Every structure is written in structure tokens, then in C-alpha cells.
Image 1 (cartoon, rainbow, N blue to C red):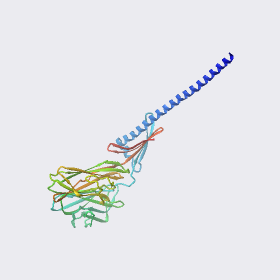
Image 2: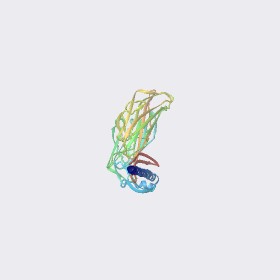
Image 3: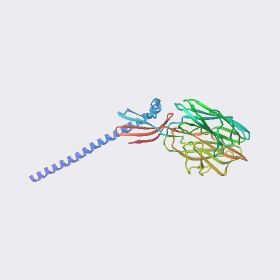
Image 4: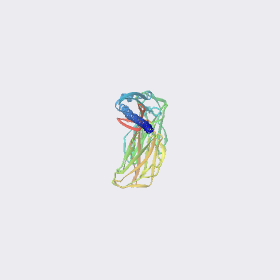
Length: 406
């Protein structure tokens, strides 16, 4: 009997020991679960707080002009704190610069009078090139020039304004005259000042649109170009082909390599058939055609030459020519890549075609602009979590390129 009582007591003690172990483990697991839940809830709060910190910075960039204006090349970043959801969020906003140097110190613009002519009638055109100092300091003009359209000839003795001597004339790869006035002494222009150069050119034109491009060379800077501008329209009895141009995307951030898709829309708006034999496109500066990207009217890669201000000129020669029935429309699509400085980048395109034996062309004035904006890098840190965002802001529109959580 005593042996049985002793055995029962031992079994009871063992059972109590096992219960203690199991309860201890269970209580430990419950405690760990509660701790894990608390940690998880804390991370969620920190994530939302850091994200809200980014949104607060973007709100200030859009709606607080003084905040955005405080970010300058000399002071490109700012740090501040914001209390959100009971958390102190540390926020840093940095404006990313391309590091390629200042914007053009001058702007170059051209106008022409008259801006139209009758086909086959000799006409004299007066060009006025205006150079405006866009910098805060005086600048010196070393030389100025103009690339006349093929078929135009400078009129001797017609120069006036900045330079009155006749320019040095050479012939460009397209057969057009290239005019250059070397200035001695250099011509100084104060901040905000405008100076004009005028000259005449004569031409007997075929139907189509004929554009020119001017430039100015400033001390210590590369040439500044006007872009293809000052169109002269030689009226024809034919409506011919209409040409339009679009680009996607139409914006990017500076310093970010981007691929752009251009679409040229070509439509026969005449009542007679048209034979398209050539398409040309003058890419903006720093844009490069993507081999193999052509689709639509032709899938062949274009011939590429360097034109004007080192821009790529794309030429698709169509042999045989492509017939367009009245009302028919087609597209030519291609891509180009670029890594851009801040600014606006315009594109120009031409089509060349025959109506019967008459050789005609149509032209898009500078169009399909690409805007390159400053990029803002935003970091918001709440507790253990950090949110990193790269974005641009343009006229109240925010474009986010990346959003990372660390």
C-alpha cells in the first residue's frame, strides 16, 4: 500500500512538472505573438507615416512656390521634420541637376517677310534674326550665322544691324547657302538686351514650305541655335499631303535616359492621287535614332546625316514611291533615345511628293515638344522605415518614376 501511494505521488509530481513546462512554453509563445503583433503594427504605422511624409513634400513642391524656389544649384536640398500619426518623420528633398552647365546665355529667333510666295516667281525675302541676352550678366557675341534653305541666295550688300559687311558663304550638304558673320570687335549685349541682324535672300521656289535656322556664338559657350523656323510657303494649286507629328512620352526628368516614340501622320487632303517619295525628320539636339524601330510607311532604317546644330537628320528614300489615294492616310513611326538637360525639345518633319510632274513638299513647323524637367529625390524616414521617391513636378502635375521602401 505504501509503495502504491509513493508511486502515485511520484506520478502526480511528474504530471505537474509536465504541465508547468507546457504552460511555460504556451505563455512564452503567446508573449512572443503579442510582441510580434505589436512590432508588425508599429511597422505599418511607420510605413504609412513615411509615405505621408513623401506626400507632404510633393504637396509643398506643387503648392508652396517659396519651398520649390528655395532649391537652387547653390543649395539644392532641404531637410525638415513633420509629425504624422504620432511619429516624427524626417524628410529630405533634393533637386537633382544634370551637371551639364548653365542654360543657353542667349536666345535666337528668326522671322521672314514675306512669308509666302507664288510657285515659279522670283521673290526677295527679308530675314530678321533677333538675339536676346537671357543671362544675368553681359555677354559677347563672337559670330552669327544662318543656314538658308536650298534654292535661296543671299543678296549682296543687304546686311544690316549687328554686322553690315557681307557674310562668308559656304554650301551645306543639302545644297543650301550657309552664311557666317565673324564679328571684330566682338559685340557686347547687356542682360535682357536684344540685337537684330537683317539680310535679304532671293529665290524662285517650287511648291512647299522652306525653313531656315540661325545661330549665335557667345564667348565661352557653344553655338546657340534658333531651330528650324521662319517658314516660307510657296503656294501651289494643290492641297497635297497634310503632315502632323506626335511624341510619347512628351516629358522626362533630366539626366534620365528615355526612349521616345514619334509618329508622323500623313494624309492626302487633295482630290487627286499623290506619290510620296521621301520622308525627312530633324531630331532635336541630343536625340539619337533607334536602329530597327521604323514601322508604317516603311520599315527600313533611314539614312542619318548630321545637320544644323549637330542634330540627326533622318531621311527615308522611298523607291518605288508610295501612292496615296484622295483621303488616304498612313503613319511613319520610329523611336529615338536621349538623356536631356532641362528644357523643351522640338521636332520638325517633311514629306516630299509628286502630283503629276509637279514636285511638292509639306512641313510641320517645330512641333511634338518634349519637356525635360528637374527631378526631385525625396527621402522620408519614420522610425525603422525609409521611403525613397524620384519624381518631377510640372504645373501642378506630379510624375513619379520610382517609389522604394527600405
